[in-house]
Image (cartoon, rainbow, N blue to C red; front, side, top):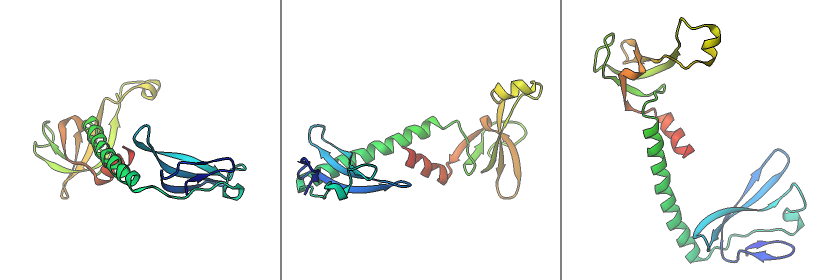
Length: 180
């Protein structure tokens, strides 16, 4: 059966899944339904325990999606997954100039650290103008970003602009993928 309220029964054959979101004292009940007008899935809240809208007041939801709905949902979800992967690639391209702890970087220019030196970023720190006043430090941008890079045998300070990323941190990649 579909979504049932004391006054009406809606979304016959379109309920794909349902879930409950528990808060501190209350619960909200959601259903993923197929929107035939838009050709996509959407999530609606069909009940809550914050007021007289929960299962104990005659509200109910049962998954009853028809085979054509499940097939359309699978195709839509596959397209959405491709779009999601594209967003991760775009965000990664936007963050190409940033360095994070855990990234593997290679020195491409500079004079204090040999070119070709490759290692993992241990820490990142921002360097401000040492001649600026304390007030200016609060509102100024960093002059440069320094990386502490280690190749396992030695550790070196390298300016961020003098490096290129060889491999991104797995933790960062997971965070980007989850956020997209």
